[in-house]
Amino acid sequence: MSSRTELIKIIPAFTQEDVQTYAHISGDHSLIHTDHAAALDAGFQGVVVHGMFAAATVENEISGLFTPPPFVTASSCSFQSPVYTGCDLELSIKIQQTTQGVTCTYVLNEVEGETVIRGKVDLQTPAGSIRLSQGDDWHA
Image 1 (tube, helix red, strand yellow):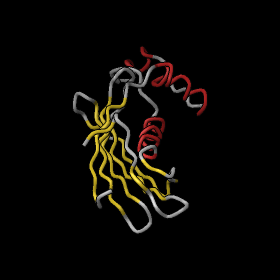
Image 2 (cartoon, helix red, strand yellow):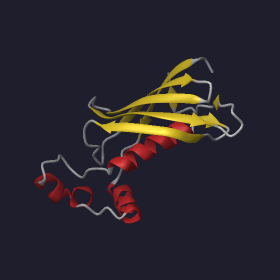
Image 3 (spheres, helix red, strand yellow):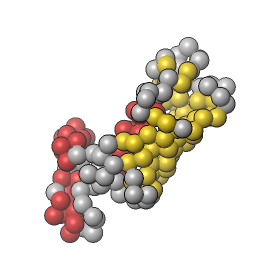
C-alpha cells in the first residue's frame, strides 16, 4: 500500500427493516426512525437512519478493507445531514499509513451528492502491520 490511497464504494440504501432492527437492538424507537408520517411531520424528507448505525456501517466497511482484521483505536464523525432510508450512498475514503497503522478519513454522500457524514477512523492490527485487501466493489 502506498503511503496515501483514495478509494470509493457505493453503499446500498438502508432499508426500513434495517432501521427497525437497529431500533430494536439500540432501544432507540424515536418516531423519526420508525414512522414515515412522523418523520415528515418533524420536517424530515422521510425515515431517518440512526446516525450511529450509519457511522458504524461506515467503520465496518473501512475495517473490512484490511488484513489482518484491524481494531479501531480512535473514531470521530460529524453528521452533516440526515441519512434517509432508500437512498444509495457513496463512501469516499483517504487512507494514510501511520507508524501505528492507518488513518482513514471519509466522506459519506448521497449518490445525488449531498454530504451526510464526515469522519476519521484510526486502525491498528495486533501484529502491528496492516495490509490493504480491497474487494472488487471498491474503486480508486
